[in-house]
Image 1 (cartoon, rainbow, N blue to C red):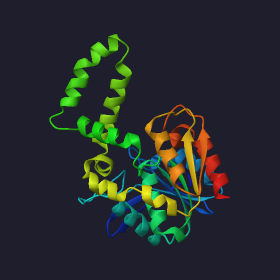
Image 2: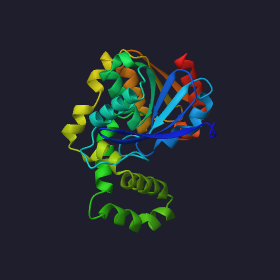
Image 3: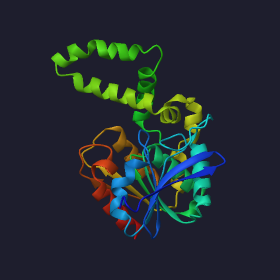
Image 4: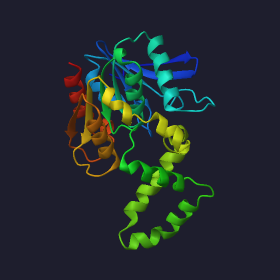
Length: 269
């Protein structure tokens, strides 16, 4: 696949967008997650490109796309996606989104229902689950200045390690690094006014989503954020079906690309 993979850029009114493209057939557009870029989908695309025309853009402000100084929002990302698809003359697409990409994909499908043949979502953000408030508070605490949270976690780490409690601290420190490294994602998910974020949530709109929707969830996840997000979408969207994938983590496109591709292929038939 990689010898056929094309990397391209296009100048839109909102900024330059970078994307990977490969294959021929029905159009599949892959939108990456909060802490990733379009490379997240390459292993999955490798299984699909013989029969599908695959596009994997970096969202505005991510990866190799432009990072303009602007007020980032989900609406802005949806408008940028609309310009991108218009420019490439992609009038009918399947949208596949992970995490933040799932929120953008769903918002686009709600705004342009006639242009989306189907949605495939993995751990999609954009709904007000019971865990969202806790994640919002944790993110703000971990990234506050001065970095009291970081100093505290590092100071208690040796003691926690003695008693086998270092795993939770490792997870929090990893989450903090993700937040700091992905400034636009942090802003979109946690750093805007709560009223602005709430206004873009899709909870109250999902009942009117007529687009066929497939949700892919890690079967080993129980009460973590990703399972809660999938279950919320499944409960609110009328046309939703959910499939479970046996995987050890939450980033299914990287950990189980063959199974993710299998379900996308069956869904897009």
